[in-house]
Image (spheres, rainbow, N blue to C red):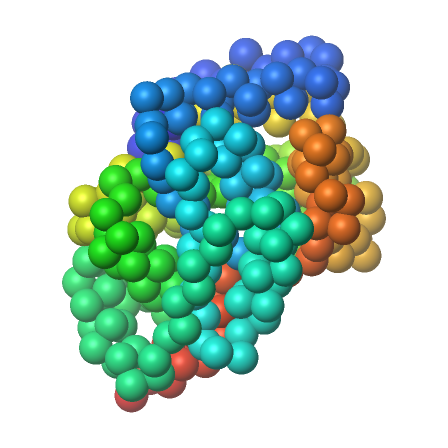
Length: 274
């Protein structure tokens, strides 16, 4: 994984971005990233939502590691559980579902603020399902957990990209992609790594290997988001999924952010407000 704490290393990527782009080159870079990430592993866990990011990671990693288990958590009625169950069945992969006990949430929120070092609402909302899932992964004696971190930044996945496209065009989208990369550590990786470290887990993110990042950055923003009304975005990544052999219906799955998908956003907000 690229060291996202080092702004100089991120800035240095600009000069390395290939002048041409193709799904073939993106696929090759991704498979190389997965090969390196899975070297010498006999088993691993995957943070899984059934969305395009975790589906690609699960599909590729499980093809190399036979003992791969997918993990998903949420409130019993959460959409994340239904989607993950459907996707895992389509991929023929083992999925472990963790249904969250509402009574446990207040104490978990307190602990999480200590682990990640902040009581920021958004950070805690995202951290809660990750914390619960990684706790279960550790209980099941896994040492390594994979995630799909980086896909939204590299392929214009956030809803914010729609607004920027409308206001500033594709040049604004490309500028925002770089901004997201510079913010990656403080906004996402710092939190995720803190939770993984707390449970003694090694977190791996194939999308954040330098070779893949460069191939992803070679794709123009028009290949990632098609209009200000584009509700699924990440089209180049979805093409990669199809090229890998993932069922088409999973390649165009639309999902909410993890804090809403798991049904935990309102629960965390209520607790923090109290």
